Amino acid sequence: MDTSPHQYTSGRDASQAPVVLLTRAGCAACERAQRVLGDLQRTVNFEFAVVDVDDEAEHDPDLRAEYGDRLPVVLLHGVEHSYGDVDVPRLRADLAK
Image (cartoon, rainbow, N blue to C red; front, side, top):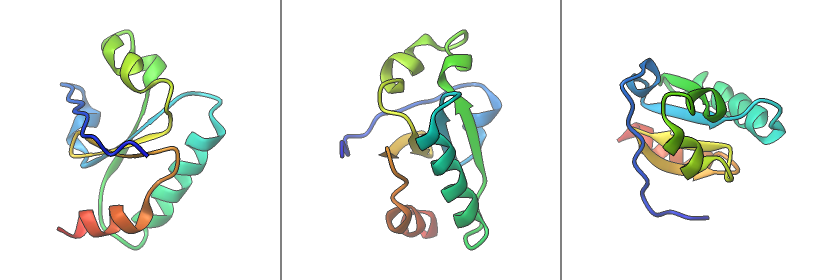
């Protein structure tokens, strides 16, 4: 897993949530990641937003260029946290900080 930091900032509403899930329509792994985040949200208090990179490309084509081949991607405070699978133990620990 690539752990190098990638920054995503946007003036759009999704950037206000501490956790952003980057997805695409028809992506089974993205749907799974969204369920995992929903399950985690029931035990840890945090907000998350879901951003479809294809929809967002109209406003930010760099987002799809950066992340579109590695979806789903979890961003924590605008920094790439994990991709492919949600790293639940790490995310739980990082949210507690």
